[in-house]
Length: 512
Picture 1 (tube, rainbow, N blue to C red):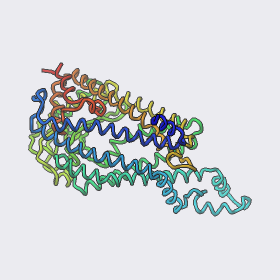
Picture 2 (picture 1 turned 120 degrees about the vertical axis):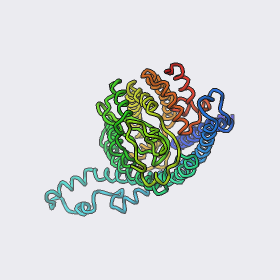
Picture 3 (picture 1 turned 30 degrees about the horizontal axis):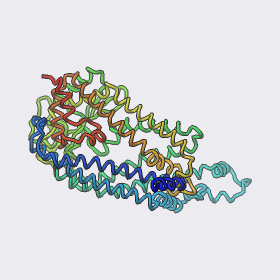
Picture 4 (picture 1 turned 180 degrees about the vertical axis):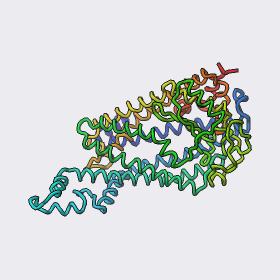
C-alpha cells in the first residue's frame, strides 16, 4: 500500500514537478547504468593480468601490461569526471542555473541597449517620440520597422546568442581542469601526449573562437527560421540544418582543420601510386591524398576520407605511416618515398616532445586500412549514416514543433512567464528526448559494428586480409588498446567490434 500511495501522490503533483523529477531520475538512472558497465570492464582490467592463450600470438606480455595500466588509468579518470559532470548537471537544474543564465544574458543585452523592452537601436528609439506626419523618408520605413515586431525578435535572438556564449564559456572553463589532467597526466604518463602547455592553451582558445564563429551565426539563423516559419517551421529548420551539416562536412578538412593541424600532400612515390591504383579499381573518385601532422598533439593514429560526388580526398595521420611519422626518426625511408629531413615540417612543440618510439604501419598495411575505409564508401555506409541522421533530425524537429507550445515544459525548468525558443530547444532536445537518444545511440552502435565487419570483409575481397590482420594488431599496440572486454560493456559502448572478433573473422580467409 505504501508504494502505491507514493505513486498516487506523485501523480497528484503539478505536471511541471513530475517532468522535472522524471528528467533527474532518468539522468541518474543512465549514470548508474554507465557506472555499472564501467565497473564490469574495470574488473576485467584488474583481474586479467596475463595474456590469455588465444592472444598469445597477438600481443607480448609487456605491451599487454602497458595497455592494461593505461586503460585502468583512463577508467579511473572517467569515473571521477563522469561523477563530477552528473553532480554539476544536477546542481544546475536544482538551483535554477538555466533560468539564472538566461536572466544574466538579458541583463548584458540591456546594458548594450538590447533589453526585453528593446524596440530598436538607441538612435531609432528617439524617433518613436516624433509624430508620424513629421517623419520624412527614409524615417517612415524606420517607424514601420519599429512597429513590425522585428526588433523584439532581434532582441530575443541577441539574448539567445549571449546565453549560448556564456553557456559554452562556462562549459569550457569547468572542463578545462579535466582536459588538462587527461592530457598532461594520463596521456603524458603513457607516452601519447606531444603537446606543451602553451600549445594546449593556444589550441583551446582557438577551438573556442572557431566554435563561436560557427555556432552563433548558425543558431541565430535557426532561431529566426523557427520564429517566422509558421506552422511548417520544422520543415524549414530541418532543411536549414541539413544544408549547414553538408556545408560543414564539405569545408571542414579544407578550411577548418588546417587552422589546427598542418596538411601536406602525400609525396610522390610507391605508397601514393598504390593508393591511386586501389581507388581507381573500385571507382573511388580520389583527387588528393594528404598527410596531417597529428604527431604534434598525440601519437594516436587515424585515417579518413571526405568530400562529395567527384571530389574525394583521403587524409592519413603521420602517426599511421611507419616511414613518415616524426616519432620514427630511426626508421629507414622506403625507396620511392621522399624522406623527411630531420626537423623538416616539425613545430617547436614536436621538437621539444618527440620520443624515441617506433610506431605506424608499413605501406601494405596502410593500403589495407584504406581498403577498409573505402569499403565504407563502396558499401554505402556513409550515405546510410547520413540518411539515418537526417531522418532522426526531421523527427526531432517535428516532435519539437508538437511540444514547443507546452508551457509546463518550460515551467519545469524555471521559466514560468516566458518560453524562449532557444530554451525550448535545449529542454526538448537535451532533456525530454534523452530516453529516445539513449535507445537511438545503442542502435547506432550495433549498426556501426555491423558496418565495421562489412568493411573488413570488403578489404578481404581486395586481397588485403593478411595486411589488415597485421595492421589491426599494430594499431591496437600503438594505441594501447586492451584486447579483453566485458561482453555487456562492449555491446553497449563499442562502435567497433573487439579486436579478437575482427581478427577471427579475418583469419577465416586470411591471404597467404
